Length: 319
Ligand SMILES: [Zn+2]
Ligand SMILES: [Zn+2]
Image 1: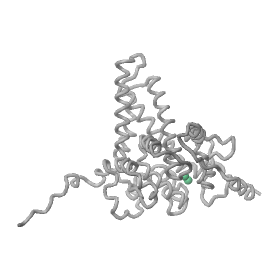
Image 2: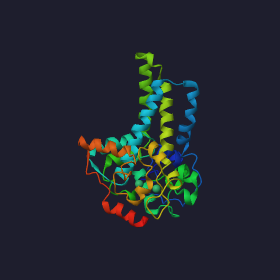
Image 3: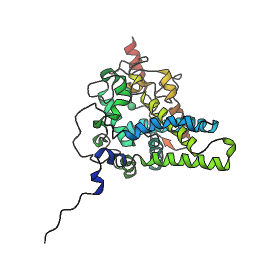
Image 4: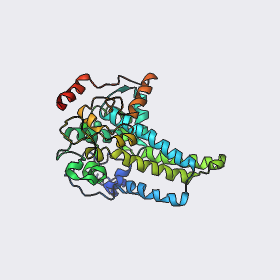
């Protein structure tokens, strides 16, 4: 009996870039394309639209509630990125429960900075190759624009480099978030619209509505994105160097404010194993303070500190 060959699934008719809007792991086993800096415009269209949609503020206007919500969402989600995507998933500098790990992975994911595994894998690569020709995002090697946003738009950086995050692959819930990394952002923006619409009806005095809250949520997200990625670009360009690390990392007080403590990047490159990035008392590190508060509640524990020898090393170098 002759059987006709099975028809390819419908989704295969769509370009790979579009299929990856939904399942970012599509084609993950394909060999990595060579280091090609051209922009994959189709793949990054949702990212471009995220920026363009902010222009709608001209039509939706503002209210104190919407602006306040944008600010709070910036701070809370920045904490999700700095404390969990960075200090927990990328560097494992403290411990927490599986439920908390998932909850904060969802929070980080709502920042529209891809999934926790993708983020951690690329960040670990950065530490392995900082400011060498192999660095994912070095402003010293490839210029500001590339290190800030260019690297995210290039084809060879879209895949999650699973070999770098073998410790995280054993959690199917994290793998799910990483594969379908647009799901949480879509739910997040839908919830913002729903909240705004409900407030328009039940609390009209606040002067907000669905579209307004949605647009201010987008503005908050774009600001959060560029705030976060100043650490990849500007903290390898401007600031002071306490430690003679082999890279160009710097400590920058201004960027430490907008990133809740990540601006002490030279400290961090010198000793990645510490949960705190401000190494001395005046180097404010809001992410660390919040993690300490969470540790008092038993939500996180085993916060790795800076061993005294790390600071001594610095004094020896300074002599
Ligand atoms: Zn790091
Ligand atoms: Zn760095």
